[in-house]
Length: 351
Image (cartoon, rainbow, N blue to C red; front, side):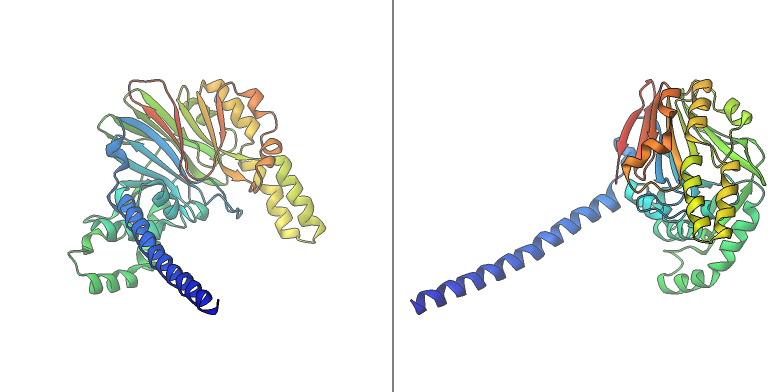
């Protein structure tokens, strides 16, 4: 009996060792498969000609578990633009399959830190992974000159280390950093059937603040940036297929303020009292979208964070009743694709 038990124990140990060895092989195989998808996959090559928009960050400066800082990626044919690049935005881009090497330019809506605090990381990764020979263009209001100069200076020591380590063929010195391109309202880019237009929005005291409209071969979308309800925005987004609009719930922010006051946090309570004045409620965003004849409304820059899906009801209020089209409370990874020659708005999710 003892001998049988020893044999059984030996078999269990042998099988365990075999399983352990196989698990390593399986893990490595899965890792290789993931790396091939991340490095070799070209999402745009697999897609029919289309205009697209995806959320690489649907959150705000208020930390939340499932939404990174403000970040939106727009694709048009083979063009890839990023509108704002907040905290966690580079990771969000990568998860979506639009890594830094693909980014053609960044468009800032305004000079608030939560909309550009990952800009240095994006520029550095694009330079290194694409062996870029020219800096990353940074479009936006006049303040982009100061922003670009600051990031270029802050990363300058790191630049020298990386050139010394990898060599100038891998990280060409001419491709380092950001190239500021301040633009007034109007057309900021036009090529290959794509027209990108900046328009003024109301985010005072932040002036100027822009939204952006993208028109591509009969399809269109617009991104509001941060704004209170704005007549100029409503005019600019008339008839777009998709409106990506910021949204703040006054009701939920008031709840936050009450807690801050009860905790003796007068400074925080003051901030929470101030912010509704230069943002837009979901209900007002729904009204704007309805009046403008928008087909799909995608809410982003969600304030406050919504850690539970059950909070979407109080967040939206009666917004769904006000807007007859498709209304989406955005999360990181949401993507809408607008095929050329069609009226479809196709929804994808990548988490």
